[in-house]
Image 1: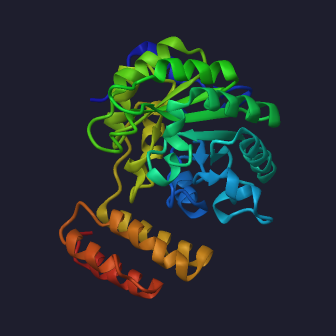
Image 2 (image 1 turned 90 degrees about the vertical axis):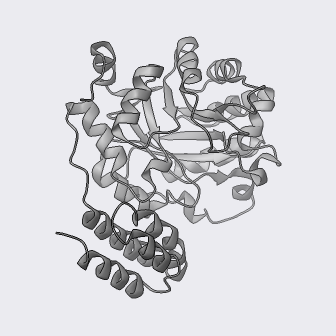
Length: 336
């Protein structure tokens, strides 16, 4: 039986305060490149109406040179609370991008200082900022000065196991004006392999006064509760656990608020959601939406007889009709 300590339960029952902005949920949907577009966020929002959502990360330099905002920056006026995540290593470009994000409707602006991908880090963005705390601090100060919404940071615990500097780094981000920090409990060199080192998140929580959000290995309600107990964090951010499972954020949020576990969706319910996701991506993005949907569809296809075969089919779908027909045939083979 899942349970939180009385002290933690009482603290997490209150709204999350990010500066002067209040969020009625302690469970957040992580920004995920190529995933957390408007369509995906709407699905997550259905089950987690109070949770903070994040856009895909937006390149501040790219934004500086375009007249029209990129689609990944598009937010629905009704989808609050919403944060737009930015990345770059130039304080002035990030400040400018933050102003555009606020004009677009962002309730907070998040700075990505944790992405491990080479094409991001080699240009000084993402987790490479862990090795350049002076620039990271200058970025936060510039963005804080540029906008009137809370500025937050998402990062990792260090570059390698021998370069874990999150305690000093996080303190500098707080001192620079960040109103919340999300810590992914892995180093840059780990990527997404090996267990997340939640103990470092606990240590960050012990030295900061701003909210600390735990991230890494949150694949279930049980994992979220264990993480919160072990870290004492002010909330959890769900990332890869939501791939093909937009129900997770809502499940964790519901348990935190009620102490009751929601009944997990059946394979048929998950596949019906997959069809909805496919149709919505087609309506939103056309043919490119169908191409993008392939990975999502394969993520939905797991945990039931015939899932492996279905994944192979869905990975190459060309049209909405083809994808829906393939899913319908799979549903017919499953018990009601």
